[in-house]
Image (cartoon, rainbow over all chains, first blue to last red; front, top):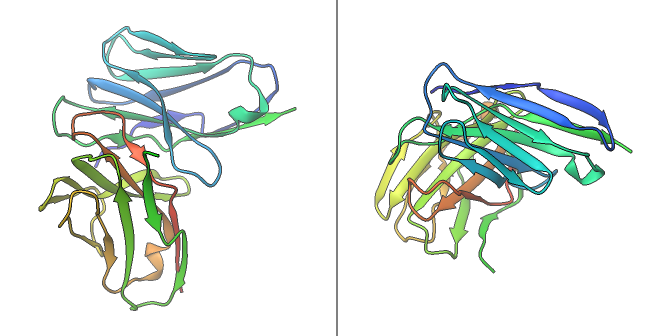
Length: 112
Length: 113
């Protein structure tokens, strides 16, 4: 099955810095999702995007559904230590019963 | 509290010894799914179920079985585990298959020696 190309694989940043990560696909997606996995826990949904060009925020997090429908971006502003974790993008190619496809994750480390 | 539970959380076993990882959700969700997470490979779907008695293969089903006899439970069965099934396993559920918010369980770390 297809997986999404997510980058970067890992990031080390200073507390207070902004973070950007992205996810790309060779196929068109109708839905883009961003999850965060804290150490020792399961992924938790952060933001869901359903429309090309859509820009959605959740606190310090902002995600965008790319115009081409083949990519999505997640930005975190003013990072704090609790932002540490693995961020996964996920997408669904069509509406209905197609399964979610996940990226390989971006591991974020925040240095205080 | 709405949740997905998995048991056991940690398991060390030996090659060939049948095991079952249980998954239960209390949200009356129709859709349930199993994933495995491996370093550098992200989350890969093993099997999913759109409702009771309806199951289907995901991307990596080889070596696994599932059943969905009740809506709340979706056990993952390894009939003859092998070392390449050493992984972190997650169960997830959502209201319907097309409903995007999947709730994940806390994970089961399996080591097969």
